[in-house]
Image (cartoon, rainbow, N blue to C red; front, side, top):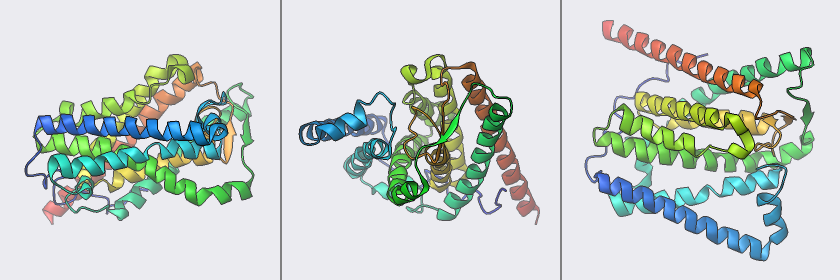
Length: 314
């Protein structure tokens, strides 16, 4: 399952950041991205409500949950475009470098790492969903009732444009948290708490939804924070953003496009299930997800270390 070619790059992920990584530049740069994001989203929202009120209501104000249809989910994905724009402005302005530098010293995505990581995560995510859902069906638990949200021709018609928009969404998060914040703080010599834990906690807090998850809201934050930490560590080990992009893409592809949960960005889910997101069963699923992520990362790092030791001996 694990590919030996997904290994550390010869150059450190932040080795090409030789200057202009002052703390004040990072703080102002992050603030500028945030301000541009809010400004652009506000502008798009005003235009949407003025010229397409029915569409805006469908995307934003529906009582069926965020991203409950392909149109609503596409609308959410589009809101991540301002992050790309903000970073494209901030990198030349504040750091005198091309936004492509966020990808690593090579200034390009390592697509081999992307596809290897995506393949592994897709297999594991599907296996996790099967293990989570099958007992509910076998023992008639009130956990879920799976149903087909879109018929296959509809799903196929939406698939390509929605995959592109999905990449916009995951790319914005990776470029900001693992690309910009991790890379710049790491270039300053920041260790685990500053370069890895701090951006990952911010990443996790952005997923806090008390109305949706109730008592599980903090557990969702913990899960996404740990995922953020592991994505940071994978990025540092491989020296490129490719693997993190692949992991994030495959994870969201599974939970949004294949096996979704009603009321939680399931507009493109081929199958969607009625799941009580505030239940103790959901808590157990999140804890299990954390344990699986940590175990898989541990297995991968051991394989990396063993392969490196063997190369050193040879």
